[in-house]
Image (cartoon, rainbow, N blue to C red; front, side):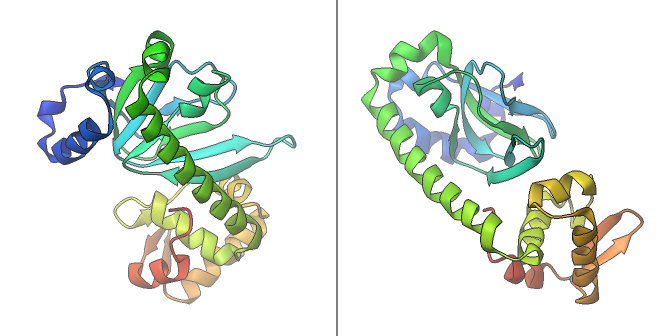
Length: 223
């Protein structure tokens, strides 16, 4: 995590203004503007979490390790999103991993140092409650997606989230775990998307040939 000056990023001023309206002056003034680099973790499952974050801009994936050792993709978060509220209201040990998929800008506040302030701040509590309701609704939807949606649709959604300049690559063994399928089934589905001219394989990566069609296939999953 790198601390920065928010005044150096005028494009984020509208989001900061929105949060100044949502939060009390006392809580907002204790928050620091920061940046996470691609691949950096905001929370690690099973580790103490000291900070509460509000995503301003960026993209983070949330995933957890199951009892059988496999990894489950829970969802992806973008702007404006509160992270760490479950840890501040209960056990401070993180329940999931949250990792930045690209440069991600946040407001951060030390939950340990300012817990009393936040827990007595009606504006913050109202904001946190609204965020929790949205998360529960989103996570219930994503659970249904993981259980009921075909792999082709879920893979299309994941590619759209993880692509960089229309190119997708990654650890395909790990991706198969994220999406709850075998490695063979995953590669077969990639091949199907290539046959439909949605993707084109280039060495070990895939280039998005028809982004609009891929978005229609994905139908907004994991958003």
